[in-house]
Length: 141
Image 1 (cartoon, rainbow, N blue to C red):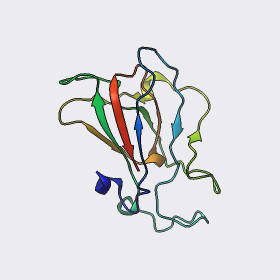
Image 2 (cartoon, helix red, strand yellow):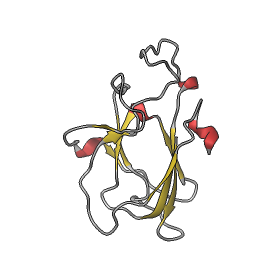
Image 3 (cartoon, helix red, strand yellow):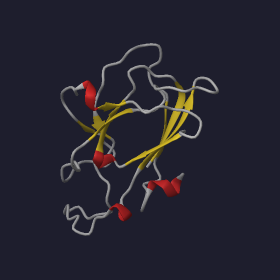
Image 4 (cartoon, one colour):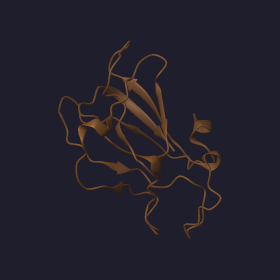
């Protein structure tokens, strides 16, 4: 799984369970707002998808054989990269205000063969699922 994280992964991983049996409001954010291996001056002139960092999620649903949403975070694909402000602490999420139109929210389906979700943090906003249906999701960065 570490190889899916791209170049210079932070080696950070976390086990996320979430609030169960309750509909929750979305809290749209990025985990770091970073994707490239770059200096603090923000110069990403040599940045490419080949030297990007990725977030990888490994999902575990509540029951075997499950097909459906609620295991992985919901996401919004951004029209362009959104980098964290210069000086933003790497260990703090980048929070976004407001709500999203329903038509832009992607709810990834978990099923056999789709146990892993991979994305670049600068390309998406994500939030906990509307309703969590998982034992766990492990996030690697």
